[in-house]
Structure formats: structure tokens, C-alpha cells
Image (cartoon, rainbow, N blue to C red; front, top):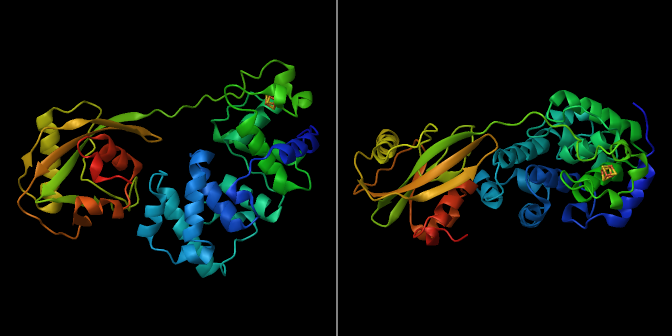
Length: 362
Ligand code: SF4
């Protein structure tokens, strides 16, 4: 791979323009790891508060490793993609129990840890330990594709090794700052839709700029096709308490609390069908054989990576208050709802559905 002498102007630009962010205060691998996991699929501005709260509660690996999953989920609440929080905890426990509380400094071992992929491993190894490893995220894919005028599809996993080779061909001794500088350029200047080439330190060597290809690159052909699901959700009252259930297993939202729900096909279900599906779930899983339904309240949309939920809240009442082990469940006073970590989708549903928004203010 041809070197394009980008390191020096890029580093100079970075030292003049880098944003002050809490995870950049030092090169502690714990803070770098945590920030990189939080930044996956989430904007910097959102992550800052979460990062500060999280590091105040768990200032180091040992503190996190001894945390309870419920408390970790509670701190993560609203950040979405909860599998990240689950893997974070697993990884911390693994590092403390098997690696003496230290991050390994070789790529192979790093990649064997829960929730750590090539990008996160590269970021930790280069930023914390100044190792010669690329850290290729979406920003870096875009910047390198433009610099080299590459027509390879960045949505295709086979393109990653080629982009990594481009980074490696240009990696200077200061890997710690080079990888961060590339990401920062992608975030601030070489943005997806309106790159500010007039502010870029690399116009002199950028092939996309020279060939007027900036708006055409990078190529991204593969799009995730989202499926649409109608999701009736039961707001079950018994006296003044509300039924909450905890999602078990390993899948989407597992480990989080919420109202009982059923996921139906993409056809909009008739009211009777929605109530029948929810009633069946309550009977089968909780032992509630009959409820008095009220009218449904509005529709709330939530978009996941691979699918969209259209949620409808169905208030209902029951005279019985069964207590069963599976799924994990609780009858909760509305005032105590905020003690239970819930998914972003569930919070949105409760907050957006008047007159129940007051049930969950935080
Ligand atoms: Fe991106 Fe423009 Fe800089 Fe090229 S010159 S790297 S397209 S901002």
C-alpha cells in the first residue's frame, strides 16, 4: 500500500483542533475502553454525561467487575443497545479474574474478550499503549476511502482489511494520537454529507478532492433492511400496582424490565387480536386468566438497528396478583418504576403516552 505522507499535517491539525473530552484526559485503558463501547452507535454529546456518571460510580475495572448487573443497566438506561452494557460487565469480570485486572496488550487476546471487536481493540491498543494497530471505525473508513479515492464498498466487511492496510501504511511513531486524529477529522471535517474540504489539512494529498469525487465517495451499497412489527403492550393494574416483567435469555433487551408485550407481524392487528395475544401471554406466563381492558392509548414508534416497533399501550385491570418465578416479575407502585432499568423503547412508550407520562419522569 502506498504511503501518502498524511501523518504530519494530520497530527498538526489534531493538536490545534481536538475536542476536550473526558476520556481524553489521560491514557487509562479502562476509560478508553468504556468510552469506545459507549460511542458505538451513539453521539459524543450524548455519551459525555453517561461517561461521567459511569466513571463516578465505577472509577476503575475492579469497581465495575464487582458491580451488580441491575445497577449497571440502570446507569446505562437510555443509552440503548444494552448488549454493550452486559458485555462490559462480563469483560470487566474476565479481566479481573483471569488477567490480574489488567488489559492484555496483544491483539489476539484482546479480541477474545466479550464485546471487543477489531475497532475497539485497535483503539485501546493504540491510544492506551501506543501500539502499531489500526482503529478503523465508520469515520476512518470514509476518510481513507476519500484520501485514496477508493471505490470499494465500505458496507462490505471485506473492505475493512484494505482500509486497515491504508492506515498501517501511514502510521507514524505517534500511533496514540494518529488514530484519534483520523477519527476526529472524520467527525469534524470529512463528514458524510457536507465535508468541509476548505478546512481540511489534507486537501493537497486527497485523491477524492483532486478528482472532484468528494460527494461520490465513499461507496456504501449494503443497506440493512428493517422489518416492521406491531407490538401491543399491556399496562396491567392490580389495585394501584403495575405489572413489570424482566426479559430473560440473551436476546434483544434481555436483562431489562418492562411492561408485558407481544411482537406481531407487520400487519396492523385488529384490536381483538392485540388483546387476545396479550391476554394469552398473561395467562400462559403469569397465570392471569382474565383482565378488564380499557381502550388503547396512541402508538409509539421505536427504531432498532434491524427492525421498527410500532407499540400500542393497552391499559387493563385484574383483581388477582399472581407471583411467579418465570419470567422474573414484580408488582410495582408507579412511584417506584424508576428503580427498574428499562429499555429506551419502553421509556419512550411510557413517557409519550398521556396520561401515563407522569408514571416515569426520569
Ligand atoms: Fe475529506 Fe475533503 Fe479532506 Fe479529502 S480534502 S479528506 S474529502 S475533507
